[in-house]
Image 1: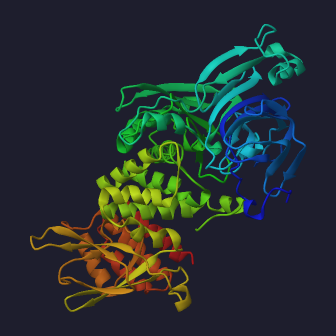
Image 2: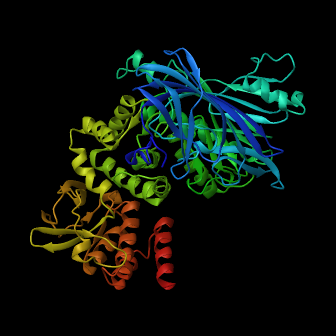
Length: 633
């Protein structure tokens, strides 16, 4: 570890200097598969220092200069130390930068366009899959492979991006094109600048062009009651992992939507290689429909002047199939294309889900970003849970990659859906909107979301949610019928069977819902907070009842075999109080408990025998998939 990097800083960058703005220039050569560039970073110095530490990986760095406004000088580093393990570079300068001053750090860089699906990488398209283009994938820690930067979500800044490329290619990035022109000897380039030297080095400079994008994101967002105009100017920034750009022979399809909050019309585009564009209309139409829905849901207008979605053939396995770069969503081609001559409803649902997923990230993750990757679910879970409505600290990069899994994408979304059901969707969304407005263009941690929802509901949200977020797994509730009611016990559910005492320590705070039949014969839902190992609930067991009303709770329910048969009879009745979700949930729980050894398989068979006249496809699909799994074991 280079001197100047303390052990406690082995995975987090120091905050002696803070990046405020990046002026980034990139030249892409698709024939030789190399790129080069220069980045000039405007810095705010928070304390006296002669050392600057930032992220860099697999880049050849050169021409490093530091300009200090207060010192009025330009200096080069006296030493450069690379820490490949932690993917950082340490520049030590001869003169100390004073605290509360401004500085500019300039670094030239170059590297190969890689095939690793991270950083700035090569992909292919076309009917023969041989059309070459280059694009970025920076989440979670790969911006450092494309340009030296402060590559952590907490370091937000503004970005001005300029791309140099061959004239017959297209450049796209987070923001709209501000200007684009072919290079000529009359092009106004600063003498001895990096760009002037770059064009002088090209064999045929007249075959290249310069594309300059607007600075991202723009200033001038409409102020809300929760933000002053002064704050708005200070916080319109974004994290490095949602920066994006691409260069290649792209075509596009264009539409627009009208904001329901301001009446502004924003362009929406679908980009891809030529063979993809004829199948892009459905994905583009989905964007048109869903943008105003999200604006109304969050009461926050989409702040960028445009939104593109870019279909690519290859994308990193780290992400689910799409990447929420702000203003430039990138998705795997297979999740976006629909043949308009077919009536493939399942494919349309898949496309709508993917587009809805990534567009929701324009608010969750882009406008408001988690402080560090241990709060990844603040992006993924909220987005997934909200689209359905329309561990402790993670220290090192290897662990950061590991949390992009089903836990972040499924469990956390299910838990938030459970919370939304318990407090009511309207109050839940009101709390989410409050949270977003309070943290516009800022970073957030878990307690910030809980405070927003607590403010709208008046409930102790941290108490309800802590066990779900901090503890592994989920519980199974065992129902024992007694005189005057039911006794419910919670234990940890394991697929290997009932846990030993040492593995059964957690007691979850469960938002428990019990569906019952009221005196007037209509369904009624009782809501409780169940936060003990075992508890008695008064209930008339002579009438139908079911725990986990509408199957919104993240827990399994174990009934006696006799009660399961009665539940099946109630579910099969023409005037059943049980919803489709209730029926699916009963089947899933019965088979999950049987396969794990909590209940005999005959209990599940007893339930499905009562559902033999079921009319809904999704119930039969659930039954069939579980029977198939049992038959194959």
